[in-house]
Image (cartoon, rainbow, N blue to C red; front, side, top):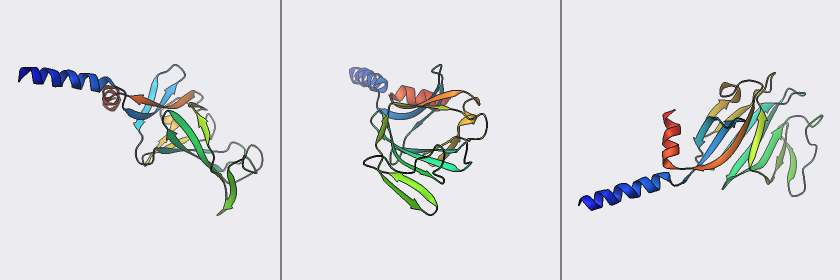
Length: 162
């Protein structure tokens, strides 16, 4: 019986160290972990911000594909300076309820670098029905890195305890 317990304990130790969970993580440029969450439901999240020139909202819709962040859709209100007025090849462009929408994008990224707004962009991350205002987890004017990573049960537990 003692051997079964020891074997079970050793198995739990090994499995607990094996990367099993997908985590959406935000790091400083110095690789300090600022935020981490297990992506639930459709393995998706949204980055929202206010366009610096138009002062209108922009929403970027992402999905996770293994360790890649995939931009699937962008929604915005103005097509002048800095915003597209058509869709890239393979994507669709439409106007719906006063908003321009580019869908069927498949822009694959390993990570996203964002400069946390010093003025008024008000970057927010919408994930798992939660809204995270980025300047609350990183100083204004700092650059952050968003990426998806596989973490172990022990890493997940450690991040939950912080």
